[in-house]
Image (cartoon, rainbow, N blue to C red; front, top):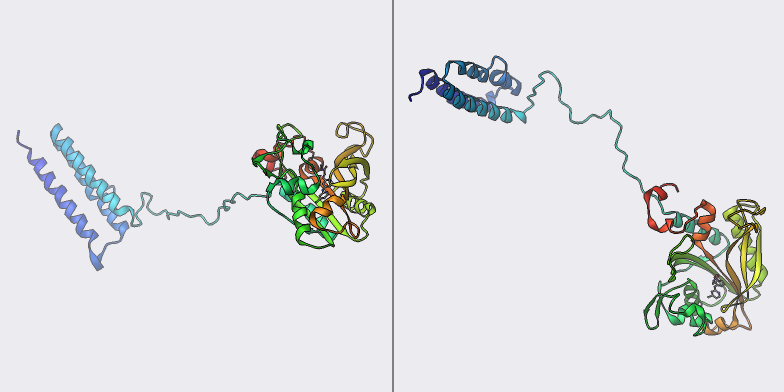
Length: 343
Ligand code: 2NL
């Protein structure tokens, strides 16, 4: 069936308008401003609108074909003008950046509570004249046990307590090897603390973690006594828990110290009256300490006739749990942000 004259006329006008728009866009130095182009071609009384008005005079099939053509032309003009400052809301200045809005705060991280506590502990001992030493976490049996006078067959050396890497290589079970290594390379006087990560084959529960942190201290010189040890521990206790805290030492046994003691701090939750944290005793156990066993001095080549020294240990998680009132050690290692953000 032949097309109607109105359809032929509209076809010509569509082609003409396409050309006219291209010419207007490529106008060179006589280029028309975008807004004026938009009004001329896309405005309510513009050229494209004029084309749509002619659809009414066409047959149904012609209207379909021409409608699609005009729509396509309209879209191509719209997209050509999109990048050129034209706007559907003429007169409204388009802003993609509002300088008056408050900025987005970047999420800010923080130190792990154990890191913060370790820094405080180090700072306390630095003030008392100690240096901070470190060493490997993977150790030989010699440094972890032998040189500390822990003989073969001692329960601490059993397979079920220690992570073995191979026959005589272990994950250190305390930071004492750092102190042995320091004594091997440094003559007295020695005043160091050895903070760091340690490993023991424990099944995790509220008070046990196979990974934990320890700070050990060592002081060796001529004339060092147990009284020096008590002074340093008391100073540390006051620094961490306040000037009212009391300390006590109970006799104990370790192969690497003689005499040996375990030391307690007075319970800060009940001020010594007795509560659930101290199980009614008024005291909470911190760790062990003592005078360095002369056999250890023999291993590192120190003259045990000339020098004496004290050593002590402490569990960092244990102190953190008392300070921050955390009742499950595993929380320090799960890295749940809801826990960490409280510090
Ligand atoms: C604990 C507390 C302690 C030491 C660690 C030590 C280190 C050297 C020599 C002598 Cl190099 N002693 N460290 C001393 C007493 C206690 O740790 O309860 N350990 C089982």
